[in-house]
Length: 387
Image 1 (cartoon, rainbow, N blue to C red):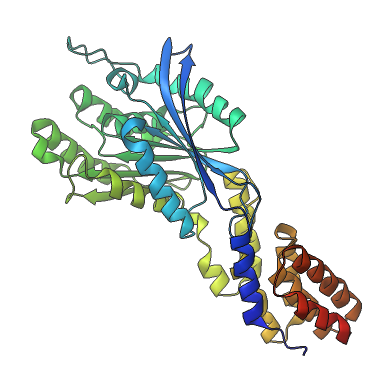
Image 2 (image 1 turned 90 degrees about the vertical axis):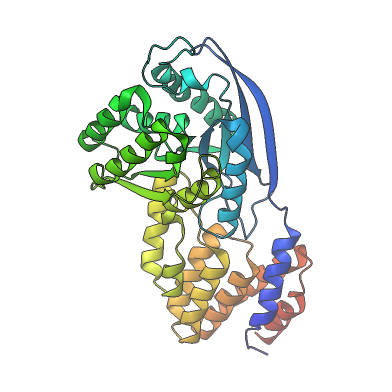
C-alpha cells in the first residue's frame, strides 16, 4: 500500500520520544568567591541536562534566568519555567539562584544612612553580576548569554535599578515583583521614571512589573502601591522597549511571587509560542520567526517537530507536493532522524514524480527505523519493495 499510514507514523513518533533520554534536571550548589564583593555568595544552578537531543526537545543551549533571594525563590522559578516550557510557552532555561545573605546592602542602589543596616551596595552588586557571575555561568554551563533578572521586594528595586543603569546590556529581560518603591524617601522611584523615559535601550528589552496588596504593610506599603500606580502612568512602551504591569492586589507580599513568576515569564518569553503560524500553515512567516528567535536568544531555534510535520501534511493533502517537500527538507535540517519527516518526504517525492529521491528517503527511513527498533520497519520495507 502506498497510502501514508499517519497513525502508525504518529505511534512511531511517540515511541521515539519515549525511547530518547529525557530531560534530567541538574541542581548544583556552590559558594562563589567574589573579588568585587570582597566575599562569597551561595549560588544554585539548575540546568536542563540533555544526554541526546530528542524530537520533543531539540535544545542543547539555553537562556539564563538570574533569581535574587535564591534561597526563597530559586525552586519556585525552576518549577514555573519547567511548566511553561512543557507547554511550549517559553524555552527551557538555566536558572541561577543567588543568595540574599547580604540583601539590604547588595540590592539597595543608594545609602539611606541608617544605623541598623548597611545600604548602598547596588552599583557594586551589578558589577559583580556583569563582570563575575554571568561570565562564569557562560563559561561553565551551556548558556546562550540571553539573560533575565528576577527580583522581589528590595530585589525588585534592584531589578529596576539595573534596567536603568545596565550600560553593558547584560540583561535582556527584567521581572520586578512588588518593588520597594518607598526606598530613599521615594527619590529613586522618581529618578527611575525620568531615567527609563530618557534611556536609549538595546532593541527588544522587556520589563514586567507587578504589585501585590502592599497597603496592609503600613505607610511604606501604601507608598509602594501609590508609586506603582504612578509608574504605570509615567513609564510606558517605546519602540525598542516594552514594559507591562500586572496588578496582583489579591495577593500579599509573599504569596505574590508564584503568580508573578508565572505571568512574568509568559510575558517576557511571549515571542516563543509560534502556534498561530503553524495553525495558519504560514511557512515563510515561520521561517522568519525562527530566524528572529535565533538572533534574540543566541542559539539556533528549531521548529516544533510535530507541528512542522502537520504543516507539511497540510500541503501534501492539498497535493502541493513541492511545498510539502520544502517544509520537510527544512525540518530534516534540525531532525535528521525524524521518522515522520522521512516517511512523508519520501511519499511527497514519489507523488511529485521523483522515484529516485523517494527511494533514497525510504531507504534512510528504514535504516532509522531499524536502529530505533521502530514498528515502522515493515512499512518502509513494503514501500521499497513496491518501487
